[in-house]
Image 1 (cartoon, rainbow, N blue to C red):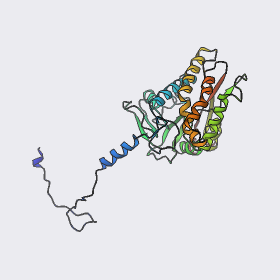
Image 2 (image 1 turned 45 degrees about the horizontal axis):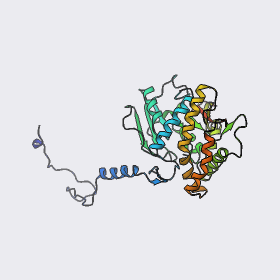
Image 3 (image 1 turned 90 degrees about the vertical axis):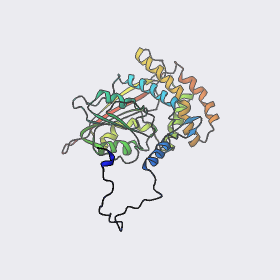
Image 4 (image 1 turned 180 degrees about the vertical axis):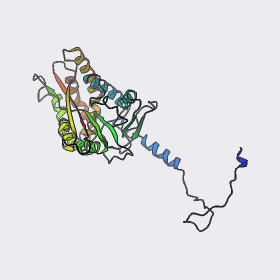
Length: 338
């Protein structure tokens, strides 16, 4: 049947907002596609600072870059942390009751979400981030959205499992913006798991001196993050946060990540070498956005101050490490008490 056989002119009832049956065209009307394309273009119009690019959506709310160099660093960091956690994607008992809906908050490059899509092919994996830097080709059950997850979450259905990983610098309050919203957004019996690095260096043998350039940099970094209302040290209190919000069956594991290859154990040495690369790639990016804003230092002053920090990052006589806190808890069923 060709188009010539269709009836294109016919009588119908006029909308209540019009006086007759004729639909008058709006000469100022624009295309929704044009508006959508404009929005999409603005999301990809990354602002440039210090020779790096940063997220465009809610510009300035996250202090670190999103460019290719940063994506490469994130990939190395993710390998190091995953190895430190025994090559596990999750610790919640998901295999007992495979999740149907999974949410990954601040997904970054999306590697974890993609791996979970492969691991649970019958699940729908939703992942959100401020920057659209995820790959275009992903498993059919994985979808990415540009979203500011510090704002109220709006989803049509509850999730069975919600996850965060290395989201330091993203939130003003991890407890209210993430833990509480995860609790509210989970189905009863669903799990929330946070895999977070507390950037407070530890040392068991005194080789990291309090007055060292490395220790001083970490202190400046932590204080600047607090001033910028993006604290990091709160990740050491994840277990208490989850329990306060109402999660039950809350468990915690802590893993040590050496800052360079100083460890004798071959696996830890490899992890440390990856972390050394991660730190050397990231020091400028970690420092420039925060230190110019909070301490009003010039980029040149910051780079000069990092020379000794870089040397100590790679000094195997300094036996420093960072702890990764992996905490997971379950939303109780109706009538269940902790």
